[in-house]
Amino acid sequence: MTKRVPISFEFFPPKTDIGAEKLITVHQDLQQLQPEFFSITYGAGGSTRERTLAAIKEFNGKGTPVAPHLSCIGDDKARIAELLDLYVAQGINKIVALRGDLPSGQVGLGELPYAQDLVRFIREHSGDHFHIEVAAYPEMHPQAETFDQDIQRFTEKVNAGANSAITQFFFNPDAYFYFLDRLQKQGITIPVAPGIMPITNASNLIRFADGTGAEIPRWIRKQLQAYGDDSRSIRAFGHEVILKLCERLIDGGAPSLHFYTMNTTEPTRQLVVDLGLN
Ligand code: FAD
Image 1 (cartoon, rainbow, N blue to C red):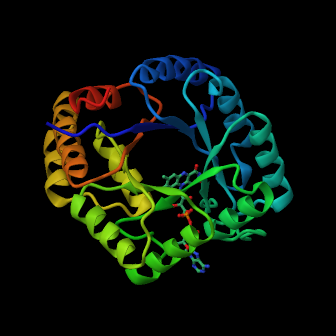
Image 2 (tube, rainbow, N blue to C red; image 1 turned 30 degrees about the vertical axis):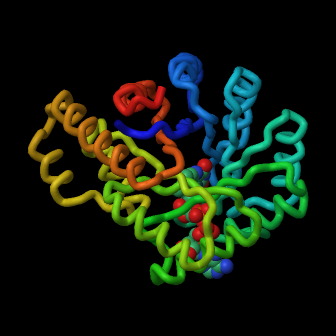
């Protein structure tokens, strides 16, 4: 039987009133699974600032802690400090600190060019108030020149004050375990939660993977292609693949699982139930 580990869920801030209404129901559904926290993404350069704040306001204080994401690229220290103060005032004590990606064509890194600069700034500004999560890339960040360099940059982020990390999604558990081994050799032992992306739709998955540098193994890609428009088969196959991935991660010692819910209850709920983590 799979060991019981904590879970957390990620939302993005809805763009429409209908999306916001729907997310309230999704939040209620997923809250029943007793997650440790819900995290809410934040568009680079402050592009979703108001919508992220609205979602935080909606869900904060409703039983499960919320963790705002905060990205630094293209933003300035004064605006980030304002957000940090607001979150302290709202009783929020966990933040996911990221660099972010500016839309292509936009240049200018801003006052805090990398996530490690943001982590350092949060510590300078708010002391130890926040538990800081950072991003990790078992299959390398797409802009990193080498794997070794990426590990070194991750180590710097931790030394700047990060408490734990959440990974980009991946489908090869060996990449995650190798990444942890390499961190351990650097003396880095913070918890690193695998980020889990349920498979529901082939074209979306390929688009996300291409955008993030995550690798879709050939056998998964081929099987998804073979199903064509048969969404029922894609969902069944996706469920089986992700369930097995989660089992292997938990059996291998993953400290928790973080689900990219894409603002829907299913298939995340079914995965959590089938893993016995509810
Ligand atoms: P960093 O840790 O700064 O790394 C970025 C790149 O720069 C890496 O290649 C690293 O090796 C390199 N690097 C780091 N420091 C230095 C240095 N000093 N000198 C030279 N190179 C350096 N994006 C959003 O916009 N909003 C979100 O809410 C969001 N949520 C996310 C949640 C998770 C769990 C993950 C995994 C990603 C998320 N992202 C989000 C995407 C993320 O912002 C991008 O992947 C971005 O390209 C890198 O962010 P980072 O925090 O990992 O950056």
